[in-house]
Image 1 (cartoon, protein in one colour):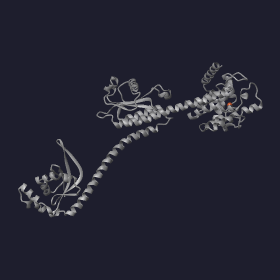
Image 2 (cartoon, protein in one colour):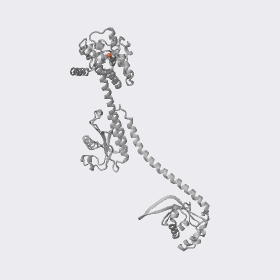
Image 3 (cartoon, protein in one colour):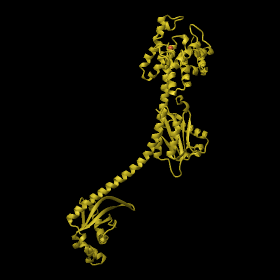
Image 4 (cartoon, protein in one colour):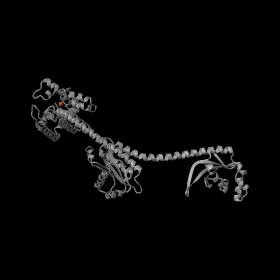
Amino acid sequence: MSVFDISSEGIVTPVGNVHEGVYFLLKSSRFQKDIVANWHDIKTSDRTVNEVWPGLMLVNIPVKRRRRVGERFSEHALVIVMIGEDLLHCDEIQAVSDEYEIESRNILATLEPSMFVAKGEAARLATMLIWMQEDITEVDRRLNELQSMSLELSESYEELSLLYKLSANMRVNKEPADFLQNACSELQQVLGVRWLAIQLIDNDPRLEDLSGQLVTAGEYDHKIQCIQEIGKYLMLRMCDEEHSVVYEDTAILDVPLIHKLAKTLLIVPIRFEGKQLGILYGGEKQEGTHINTIDVKLCDSLVNSMSIFLGNMMLYEDAQAMFFGTLHALTNAIDAKDSYTHGHSERVALMSRNLAEAAGLDSHTVERTYIAGLLHDVGKIGVPESVLCKPGRLTPSEFDQIKMHPEIGARILQDIRQMNDLIPGVLCHHERWDGLGYPNNLAGDQIPLMGRVIGLADAFDAMSSNRTYRRALDLNQVLDEIIRCKGKQFDPELADIFVNLDFKPFFDLINKHQEHQKIAS
Ligand SMILES: [Fe+2]
């Protein structure tokens, strides 16, 4: 069997090793003429085997081939040629021998008996060969598919590994500036650009320290102020743009400063819920490479994560501001029940936080102690105003009513899951180190630390501010009293730390509250 490429013009080209005798026949002008005459039939016939001459059988291998020849397309067929015994007696052999002017028996001598295929066998053989060809085509198709999939995979891998690294850093309590710097440096390396920068807006207080910040990575010849100036210019230019833009030649921007910095530039807007938060821009890939669609896709994915991070940070700030706003409103409402305790909760919260910090507690506990300090007297909501604001001495039963406020406060917070950890501070701020406090007569280490801290700050504020029954003591008197009562009313270690605190913020707050009261009255 031999394989040939045959064109619609009858041109025969051997594919691989072919039998010379068969090739000799197929090169003849008689064969060429018969191919041209029967081309349509050969290409479209349903038959597996096309017998062009008696005993000369072509098996069409279904591979589409078209080539441009001058102004038109030349059709091609890939065929397997099989020969049968009928070829020995057909008239066409005589025509070929006449053309080459040789004896027909010399031609026939080249065809060995072992080559002949019976007619029935030819059809079966052809079917098997076509199946094999189909299998090979399928294998080829899958190989191509596999190659394109592995290319896509390697592109996705870079994107995924970058996003993975960033998501590991995307915690709200992670320093946002570190997150942005990390993202910028990683992306600059993955993209292979000479430099990359992130410029953020400066008109949203929720961005806090990040407001107006510029983050850069890579190398640039310009001063940092120049990069920032360009960032602000691009931010204005892209203020309504939602999609990335690539400038293959920055001359088109008509800004010489940008053109000097980078001939090619990639700009990606950073947006959250339709609002512009900033811009990512960078340029100058290595010689001979361009910013391509994969680079843009990667930047888009990263900027998307970055937008979510910044957006979450802003939402968190919003939620925090609302939470503290509500807390202050609530504590102000409690303090307002008694004009002498105006600002008391805020001052107790401040000194509780400062004491907790100086005692070496972790930042989370310090913050929670501050909130518990704000809420420590929330239970006074349940004490009648006539008792709370009563001038002069309280009767024992009135005093008992006042003593209920830590427990009422704890019950109020009990139903708010996020505030359960504040309950020990609220419930135990009137316990005493010697066990003579209330409501549970706890002593020493039995009293939760948060309760001991707030209790000290509470007593300090009570002594330092005017009351219905006495004027405020001066600072030295108060501190002496605290030292005198350490080990009795107060935790001795905390008392020693407390007297060494900075009291300026406390007196600033007292002045602020007095100013407010003057304005209110
Ligand atoms: Fe209290």
